Length: 308
Length: 111
Image 1: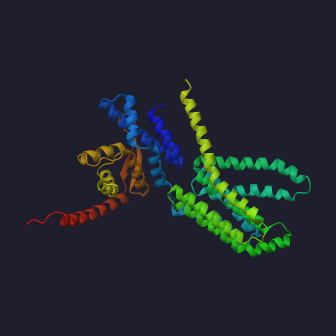
Image 2: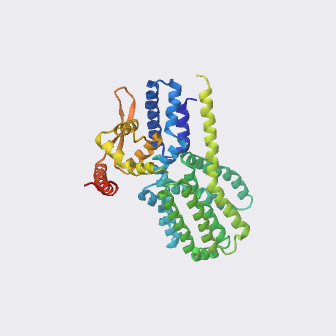
């Protein structure tokens, strides 16, 4: 593979910035390699050697990509507020105890759908992913509600619905990972928390359930407010390692808040499973990203090898 | 990290702003111009120039625009913005004060 192509492929692998900026950066460095190669050819080097030397002089593509990432990874305060907003809306829903208020619910649902569609169609900016996460929650919630179907219908519906729901979640996650796996982790962040609260409240009579919900509403609100702050911090931090650290530490902190509202319905095994699920959802996008990129590299190599 | 590199690191933004203020340029041209004007003293690590340019662009002090060269190739030229002109004027004033003060201490007294 020519040195220039190899360099830009490596650069793209590590860049993880929005596609428009990425193409600008790659094009600019491509132009630099072209100019430098031309200078080296004029000084007497053979063309191939000149190109290799020009790319070498640019330095490690990983380092350049990392520095570029740090330039673009920090979102503005406006983006941070936008990213925190869906969590704040949910926090307000529970703080004001208006989860049975249709206008509130429809308002939140409408905002989630509108912002998610707008962001998805406008270059997938960083603030989009918390909104997108809430779009996935109804898919999971419907799956949970299937338990309440009578008799054999529950199994029948689950068999049909679960693969479909998994397909939707997997497909959205995969698209998000292509943008940056860290955004997928951010998007999936509320899932263990929502699941934790559903399990903590337990399944009982409707009256008892509502009474418990009223009791723990401040804690639910607090957990989503912390989630909102996490999303805002995530957008404002530059370094990748710090973003991962924030997601991990605060997810555990929120699970502790959920534990405070638990009426001994989850148990040790349940908590262990929730902690494992939280870690899994945080890290599995990184593994999937690796797989997707390896598959992409293989197909690029094959397309370079195949004769015209 | 050696002393000269630290000095350059602290002055990179001012040097880039100063060059771009003089004339809009693209990355490769900036490297060559820096080398030429400093008699080879400033030899930028090529890969680190572009993140520095993009950082300045994100701060709103310069703006990049793709333009065609006479040969037909496109290059990303950087222009200074009004915000950049103001920042450069402030930096130059600060630099002048700083270098005068340093010279007063570092240079042996004459007369």
